[in-house]
Image 1: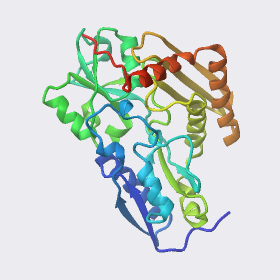
Image 2 (image 1 turned 60 degrees about the vertical axis):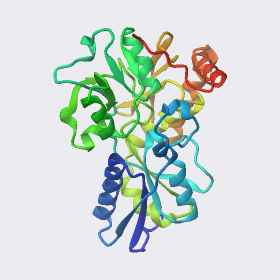
Image 3 (image 1 turned 180 degrees about the vertical axis):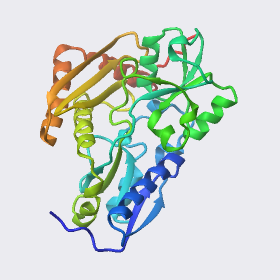
Image 4 (image 1 turned 135 degrees about the vertical axis):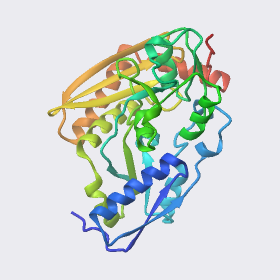
Length: 329
C-alpha cells in the first residue's frame, strides 16, 4: 500500500457552481479530517457544459461535458485531484487518469419540486415540468402521458428561480443535490425508483487523480466507500455496455441486501412510448464481480433486442442534428 503524500498542499479542481463548490468543500473536509497536516486549496475550472446554457444538454452532445476541462488540468499537473458528480463522469478514463475514491452515496432518488402538498400522482394534464434529462422526460411521460415536459438549464438556484417566477409549474431534480445545498424544504414529493429510475451513479461523488500519483491516491483511500463503489461500478458497466450517455434515456440503481446487489434498470425512447424496465440480482464482493454484473446485463439486453430502443433514439438524433423532443400539451 502506498504511503500518504507528505506534501503540505493538495490542489482540488472543481466547477464553480454552488453544488460543485459544496462537493469540493466536502472532499477537502474529509481530507483534512484524515490528514490534519495537509492544506487543501481549491481551483475553479469552467467546463463546456457550464458555458453552453442555451441548448438542451442532450442536444449539445459529446461525453465529458462537465468533466473534460477538469481532466485536462489534472493531466498537465495544474491540480492534484478533480471532484465530480460521478454521474457526469464518462465510463472511460483518459490515459494516465484514474478514479481514486467514490464517497458514500447520498439519496439517489429524484424529487418533485413544486408548491407544498403537490404530488406527482396528482398532477393535472398540461402541468409544465422542467427537466434537462431525457431519462426523466421519458419516464415522466410514461407515467403520465398528459404532462407537458419542458427543457430547463442552469444550476439548482437558477432552476428554482425560473420555477418561482412562473416559467414552470414543477421541476424534477436530484434529492441529494437539494439536501446538500440545504434546500430540502423545497421538495414536494420524493419519486421512488419504480416510477423514475435514477441516473447511473446519481448521488455519488467521485475523486479523480493521476494514476501514477500514488501519494495523492493514498491520501484519498479513507474517503472511498466500498459499497458505493461496487454499486456504481455495476451501474457504470451497464451504461458502458449499452454505449449510453446523456443523449439516451437509461437509468440504473444498485441497492444492497447483505452481499447481494440488486440492479434496477430502465431503457426508453424519448417520449416514454416504448419503455422496458427490470431488476437483476447477484452476489457481489469484488470490483470484477460488480463490473461483470453490469456488463452481462447490458449484453443480455442487446441480445434480446430490448436495446434497439436506444438505437432508434441515436438514429433520430443523428438524422436531425438535435434531440427530437415533442412538447406535450
